[in-house]
Length: 253
Image (cartoon, rainbow, N blue to C red; front, side):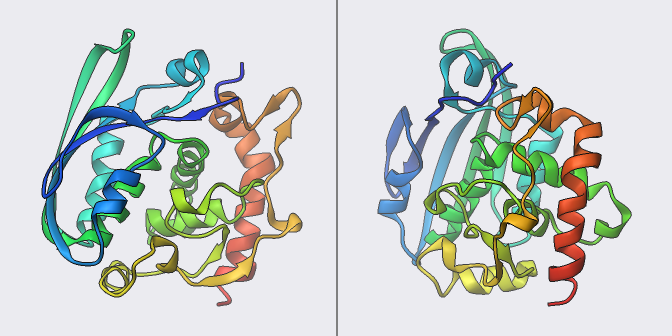
């Protein structure tokens, strides 16, 4: 079943504070990006995450949250280690055409505009394809003891650096590359001195055909959630690629 095929971008959100936008659908957070720079700003956001794959499969819109409320909470808490902010997550039924969604409220107070961009992009990873499945694999990798002390942001970048396509740089933080690992305090310092998110992470190595995951396994492809959900396919086809890049590149940096 093709859960992620022929997708249009679908970021559904509102904001109020230094600038205002009513709840609506856009391709991305470009409205926010246009109204923020490196200067400190306060703003509140409300972002809609569609649960599961029904919405993306039936409507062909790229908004598919594969995670639980607890996982969303933990995901956001990791970003709180860079700058403090408040958040609240509610579950809503019959949203729009009858879909179940998470409504995520974010309140950022007097923090750099670059962190607003970072946090919204970090949240986007939870619902927009292919970042949602890249993050899904990062959480699978986190279960391995060797990644006990590796941050989720570094694991996400590891999987991104092995992905068999090149998503749009403007929708992500790190570029399509194998990136250097970073501590949260270093990310915070970078965000104070850059204008573009793509400049947060330095490159270790270009992506190459020999360190990319396959795009299919039998009848399943990367457009099928089952391809990502299957622990068997993960262990056989994808984890060896991630481990090779981790051991041969990142640990030898």
